[in-house]
Amino acid sequence: MTADPNCIFCKIVEGKIPSRKVHEDDEILVFHDIQPWAPVHFLMIPKAHIPSLAHIGPQHEGLMGRMLALAPRLALQEGCGPYPEGGHRVVINTGAEGGQEVHHLHVHVMGGPRPWLKG
Ligand code: 5GP
Ligand code: ZN
Image 1: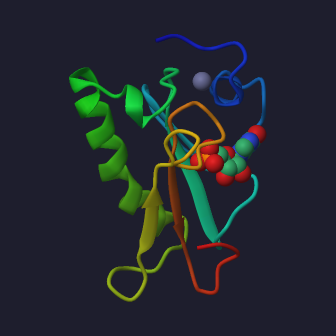
Image 2: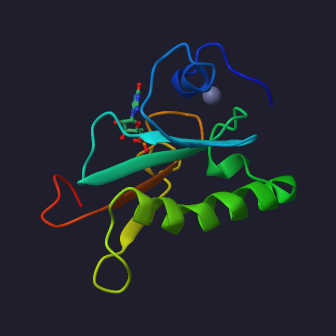
Image 3: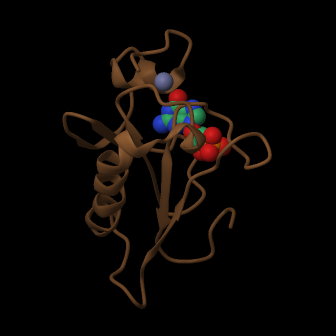
């Protein structure tokens, strides 16, 4: 899937909207959430426009595996404490009832000392 011209996260991928980048490679972009719920809160997205987790098929297993494997490494890099005292939360909101507001697949990674704003 290519970029969706109306998608805010595609615009971030294209650099049309600025973001505070955490990581970038051929297929994945990671940037800080603009309204963080926790001391550390970043979003991991595929560069390709995939609307949600509900759109994931067998062809995406490698991508999803790489995103999930990257999460704990970037969490530590961004200041989350090490497991088990530290740690982090990984969330993928999917669809309206799942609380998804931006319809470009994204993985929330949150962590840092409590209390958090939400969660
Ligand atoms: P959702 O509710 O769809 O799971 O989460 C969307 C997230 O994207 C929210 O946490 C929101 O703060 C974040 N967000 C929305 N627009 C922007 C933006 O323009 N830049 C950044 N960095 N984050 C955004
Ligand atoms: Zn998009």
